[in-house]
Image 1: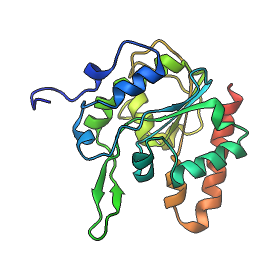
Image 2: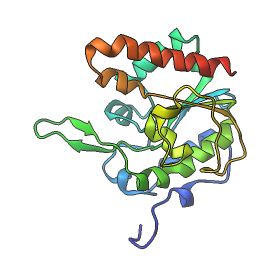
Image 3: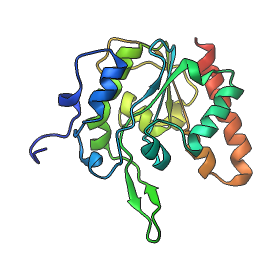
Image 4: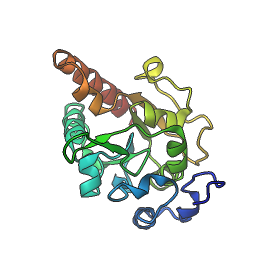
Length: 216
């Protein structure tokens, strides 16, 4: 990719709503430099006919190794929260705003430490997310965390100001679908928080998911 070329996945995204075809194409995406260090592309997973789509930030270490979204500790907590909210994950479509794992190596050992994607990387990867929205056509879209929310609702969006509210896509993305949009914290935020606050944080996440489920 030329330095003069603005990073974007757009040239790699085929004109199709076939999720399998999109996933295969994403395997070869070089739309930004994150593919250089990541083990593989981690595309979305779930039902083509899903009425609810959940979007996180990016794959983590375990997701990068396995090649599937939300299979690590945050994914296990998400499963627990979805179950508590009465949502069958098997009936949803789950993906991330960024499809490659961004990390820095630990000072010691072989651990890879998550690093938040920057705005350039988020925007570069957004054509894949738009393609997934066009393919799935969800009735309800849940943004898990600020990165996902800002990818779809703009860089000035503040999750804390609109958490749990019924929202709609407002022009930040050009896609022919108008789902009910809800924003909440990423499951990893529950895991990273103080242990004494985790029950309350988990309960609030479940409450947000119940609001989203009620919109179906």
